[in-house]
Structure formats: structure tokens, C-alpha cells
Length: 111
Image 1 (cartoon, rainbow, N blue to C red):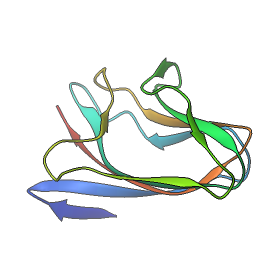
Image 2 (image 1 turned 45 degrees about the horizontal axis):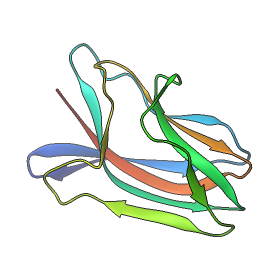
Image 3 (image 1 turned 180 degrees about the horizontal axis):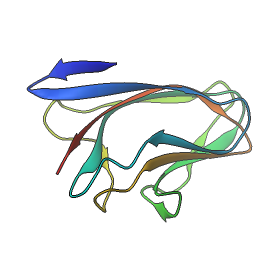
Image 4 (image 1 turned 120 degrees about the vertical axis):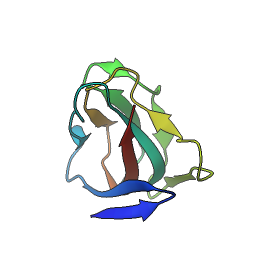
């Protein structure tokens, strides 16, 4: 559901994995556009790692270790995103190993 924020339309995406895997978080946004993440809230069911990729190929982060029932909450400052795809018109993926995660992300689409 889009949420207005400083003139941008933000989209919230629920993350509900049931097993470690690659999960598409946001589809390719279109020519010349990139995905900019402004909030991440994720909780792991067990000890494991996660990383973000674009187009299920290029790593945007290295592996991030999480403890069992541990998690991460990262919120942008309202101006600058915390994570962006590097190449226009590529999707955003979350990849988990050993455990799976649940939570949500919030992002906007822009050049």
C-alpha cells in the first residue's frame, strides 16, 4: 500500500519467508528508475545470514549475520535511503541462508 512521505509514494512490503531462499522484494521499476529502501525490519527464526541483491545476481550487501530470534531495524533519516539498487530497472531481492526472516521493508521508486 503506498504511503505519502515528503512528496514520495512509499510502498510497504511484508516479508514472510517459510524457508531460507531468495525472495523478490520489489519488481524492476522501469527504464531509468531505481529502488530506494528507507526502512527495514526483519527478525530471524534461527541463526543465519541474509543479504540484499539486485536482479538476484549482484550483491548490494555482504552477508549479515543474525542470531536466532535476533533481527535488524534500520530506518533512514527521511532524506537519504539506506539501500538502493545500483542499476536502473532491476528488481530487489532478499537472500537468506540457514534461517528465514519475517518483517517488512519500505521503499520508493526514483531515478
